[in-house]
Amino acid sequence: LKQSSLPVPNFTPQAGDEVVLNYLYDRSLIIAPNAEVYNQVVEVFSNITFVHPDLVGAMLSMDYKPNPSQDDFRRACALNAAGLIFIALDGKSMFVDCGSFSILKSFKSGQIAQYHLPFYTRVRDINTVFWKLDGEHINNYDKYYRFLLNTDENTGKIESAK
Image (cartoon, rainbow, N blue to C red; front, top):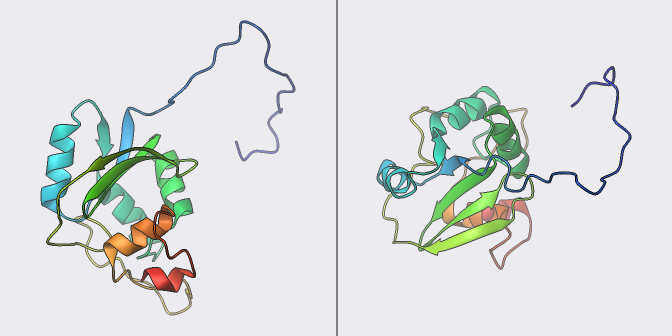
C-alpha cells in the first residue's frame, strides 16, 4: 500500500504459513490485434475472466498514452485485479505475468492480417499531447509488443519498436 500512515508488519515467514501461488491468475488483460482474434481467445480460454480491452484503452486515452509501457500494463492489472496479460502476436501468443512481465506459457498461433493499434479496443483515437515526449504512436504492433516482452533480437531504444 502506498500509505505511510498505516503500520508496516514486521514478521518473517514461519513453518505452517500458507503460500498463495498464481494469485489472480484467473483474471487477465487481453492484448489482441483485432476483434476476430479477441473473440477467438475469449472463446478458447473460457475458464479465464478477461478484462475488456476498452478499460485499458480508456485508461490510456485519459493518460494520452498511445504506446503502453510495462508500467502502464502493471497499473491496469492492479486497477482491474488481474494477474495475467494475454498477448496475441503474429504466429505466437502468450500469457504473461502482470508483475514481472515473464512469459508463463506461449502458444503457436495463426497469422494476423489486420491490426488495430495500439491493440483491439473500441476506444477511438488514443492520442498524445505535444508535451509528452514519450507519446509516439505504435507503427508496428508485433515489433512493439515483442520489444516490451524482450523477445525481439533488437532490444535497443524504444524508437526501434515503433
